[in-house]
Length: 245
Length: 106
Image 1 (cartoon, rainbow over the protein chains, first blue to last red):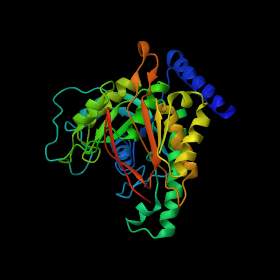
Image 2 (image 1 turned 90 degrees about the vertical axis):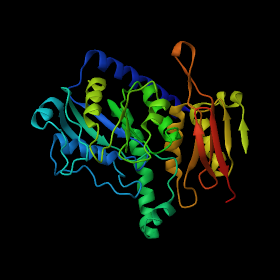
Image 3 (image 1 turned 120 degrees about the vertical axis):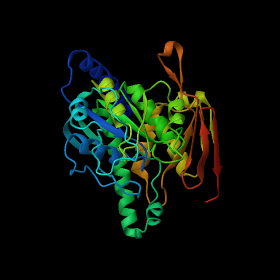
Image 4 (image 1 turned 45 degrees about the horizontal axis):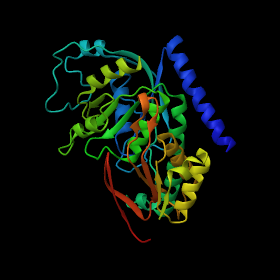
């Protein structure tokens, strides 16, 4: 009981200190967490941001189809999101070697300048069954080891919320947005007063429906993107610069 | 299946509530909480669950309606939360006012 009260007091303290910091101390660099369920594309998005603004040859992690590939939070410090200088360098503003078939011409001037540390967090889940990993060809020992690490990763992702300045909740546009994981993430960010920009990922897939995400969370900005193809990333950076400044 | 009244839930401190739910689920019960858990309590329940996942207990399935804004938008009102063992319960469809789940024997 005492532990619960302490935790509640700590959380209230955390909210107040966050408010005071926001009012009187403007941070030079914002710590931005990418949160979401496993396989939503968190590492792909983190890689996309780093490839665009740091170095095309540096990866924060290697995305795979196996869930819980990221089992430790990874932070990349000091990323300067400067959209204006990028758009000057390249009118199509697409850093990937094979741009999508219909690149979006930069018909308007886009401005976004923000210095961030990006935190790629392990996927949040309510269950982790080692049998699920065996379905991807892992042997039992390896599957159990991965499951154990994945549970620790979920806890680590939750702990990071105490030390984060803004969050990009990443959702899969091909999936139902009303999952409990999504609802819990959004609810916690609202309760803690952490600003957020929801990214509706995987819009390059034929069955994507970002409108479902927009309808599910009308109180927050939702930006449809494809982190893999680089579609609509300028809009995400602009909204991040607006919301996390 | 245990259906827990809002009065009983509200009488418990947060951590006791989570322990009560998780113990019930680990014993194989579906626990339905009238009034529901707050999103912070749900996050704490996920954290507590992760510390207890093992080969025989892969975790929980949890569903709930999104909370509603309360008086003057100052307090969010939770509505209902269903928690069950991941091995036997699976949510098949969910929107803001409806939850469909299937429950199977172990």
